[in-house]
Image 1: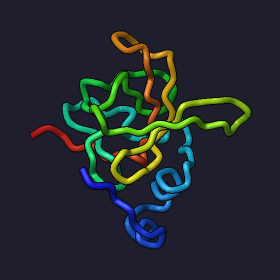
Image 2 (image 1 turned 60 degrees about the vertical axis):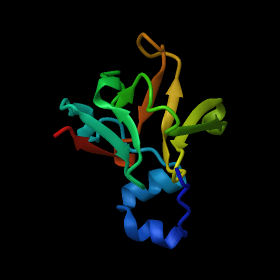
Image 3 (image 1 turned 90 degrees about the vertical axis):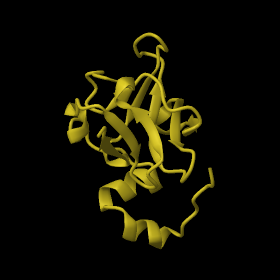
Length: 130
């Protein structure tokens, strides 16, 4: 899959201010603010920046954190790197196609992976199964 590299001005035109701040500047939305927290339908969660599939509804679980959470991701959909902000080391992840910041992954999730991909809802778009 080809990488997407757009000028910042194009991202600003394409995205809402909230999505732009999270995807392009690694911001974080307020906990509990995303309608995707309550999304229960079958479907696919795609990157709000480029539409690449990142998670399926079968990967989602209620973490109680206030952000949409998943125990695994679509293979090859995410890139990770260390985040040393906030006086700790965390693993952040980004869309592998457009580089859009999605969230952080933690080791306190459910079986079978034990991982919790804690995602900003404004960085995702939900596509219901037809």
